[in-house]
Length: 454
Ligand SMILES: NC(=O)c1ccc[n+]([C@@H]2O[C@H](COP(=O)([O-])OP(=O)(O)OC[C@H]3O[C@@H](n4cnc5c(N)ncnc54)[C@H](O)[C@@H]3O)[C@@H](O)[C@H]2O)c1
Image (cartoon, rainbow, N blue to C red; front, side, top):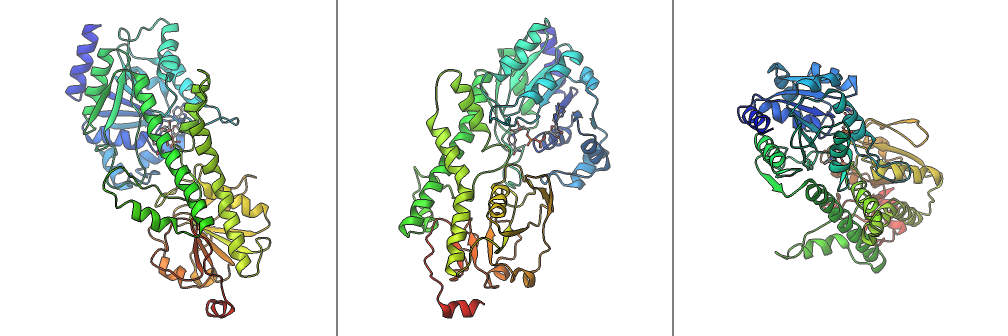
């Protein structure tokens, strides 16, 4: 085994090791691209042939990777995307980046990891390093990989090496990328950790070694539960401020001037993406197995899940100012993505807001410069309307959900259509017809004002 350890270590340090990434999505594709940029040969395995084909064509489907970058990477001849799992036989170090969603019952769905492990069992290369990157509950690396491989006679630290290293990628974050975001890693044995740390040091600026995979798994869940709980807290504060007639946004700005002991979080229409709504549920599910019931996690989840209802009720209050009801009113949602400047609609609270308005009988449409279409809960495709301020005048209310940077805020504000701003994106336009969450409807619209904005 010592020999295999040294062989792999030498291959990593000399960049001769063949690296593999399973799952070429938001996490896996940027990782594979970074590995190639740092001089490695990389095999990317994805079940979706259309993704493999796009990569071959140099057409990126991930916002943070430009097609130019992808073309350069492909021209290097060192990136081979494939759907063929038998390529595992030539991979020295494999990173697993497949989805970890929730099941219908909100329990962890680790079936994607299980599928990958089944393929590893069939095709694994002797002495390979396997690193799980998918976010999951503490114990997964041990239970779903180590024990499974042990069952077919493969011993960790002898026949292969094993680590867990959580992914922290923040799509559209121009400052922190795969390269300069510190990476936590835990190995099953000391040698596993040495190899894992050596590998990731090749293409990540700072590697943070920890004692074992469970610490690494739990650290990721602590980070994301911290966000979920703090967002829920500020969402509750927003609803409190609304009731008390205090502007939460100004309150947060004031509190954020404290140079220590305070970190601003901002309210919104709910939480979205593949991480914050899901990851805490992985933790609370696992904790229940130990008869530990996390009230913080459940409370945060319920507060955040209620935000779309708050947005709808707030819209009803605004329409009431204009003697209108939600039923039969024309509502435009501005932005559907779960965060600004990306097209990702996974778990976006906008989807829930859309359904709530529909159920309440509104004619609801949306505009998103990034997301052209989405599927509603009945499976129907809904398309974004064209950007046309003249047509926007026909809506009874515009609800800003996602504060994309390239929306024409001044033009939209000047239309005079009542706006509910869930992100304080219209901060520069303190007009009476612009309302926001976390603040009461303080400008009862007088008939005179109505005439101005009609
Ligand atoms: N998106 C994020 O911002 C983010 C951030 C940190 C961590 N994570 C975690 O990273 C993991 C991956 O998330 P993502 O956002 O990249 O997901 P994604 O859906 O964008 O990509 C996953 C890819 O895996 C492929 N895939 C699914 N099953 C497969 C299989 N059995 N074999 C090969 N390929 C398979 C899919 O076709 C897809 O291309 C998740 O655990 C997630 O929680 C995501």
